[in-house]
Amino acid sequence: MDPSPLRYLSDAEVQGLLPEPRTAVSLARRALVARAEGRAQVPPKPAVRLAGDGFANAMPAAVLDEDLLGCKWVTLVPDNPARGLPTAQGVMILSDARTGETRALMGAAALTAQRTAAVSGACLDALGDRSSPVAFLGAGVQARSHLLVLEALGYAETRVYARRPEAREDLSAWAAEAVPTLRLEVTDDPRAAVEGAGTVITGLSIGLRGQELDPVWVREDALLLPLDYASSVGSRLARDATLVSDDVEQLAAVAPAKLAADYPPATGWTGDAIRQPRPAGRLVCQNLGIAATDVVFAAYVADRAADRGAGTVLAR
Image 1 (tube, rainbow, N blue to C red):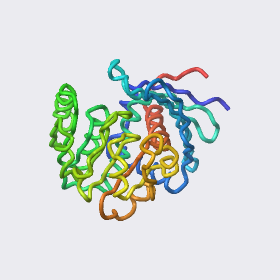
Image 2 (cartoon, rainbow, N blue to C red):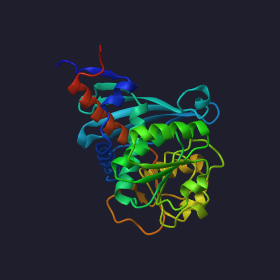
Image 3 (cartoon, rainbow, N blue to C red):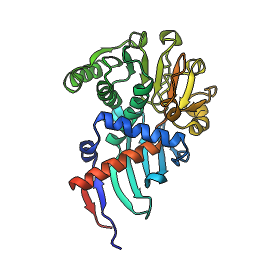
Image 4 (cartoon, rainbow, N blue to C red):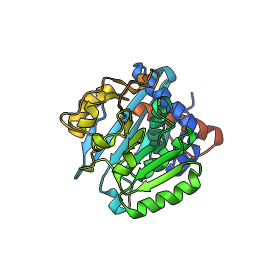
């Protein structure tokens, strides 16, 4: 039996092979449900501590009933923007779950940006209020990927909080071209962004201190979507809400160190919440970014690459 091709895809090539936003939301929903149903194997992320608040994770996962297997190696260095580098960087390894052969190696930046926004999109599609503004905290890569999803899902108005004037200007210019039907307000006041918003997505850099939202600003029925370990949704806000997670077990293991010693445990899975009636009051979907979503997206990209002959086939 001849070995199957081993394909390398750069971040730029991955970007060109990613699904359109609504398909991405469907892929994310599929991965969330697989984890909630116990069909996805997602062991705890082994971590290596770096200087300052930086860290690196190995993120393996398998969805064996779909023949999916892979691992993402990702580093997060909060000081990188000052160096002109992305906060998060990584590489995705996709394997054939039947034979164990490596199918593809690909840059993980574009993949991670889209799958993170798509996970939020699965929550917004099932649980969000399209008649109310959405607040997004942060003006980086995730702001852009989330705005694309919001427009695709039919949301009309978004308010973005950004601290730096140049970030506000860059995002406004990009949005005018990329999401022209989305009404966008960019502000330097987090309270102005959050008050009255039906959904609040927190995408400030991991490791920032003193950025917790005042619960007084947040609607009593708001949907809150903190990305990964972003610390804007603090213990006070989480305790007074229904709290679910894409990985209940992982949140219980890491919340005391990554969020707060008194951060409450999740009472359910995001993959279940998006298939059930929305509970009354505030709802926090603490989505940590499970590797099952990375594997699902990587398989989609690898299949498209094979169909189009994209990337570079490497010698084994």
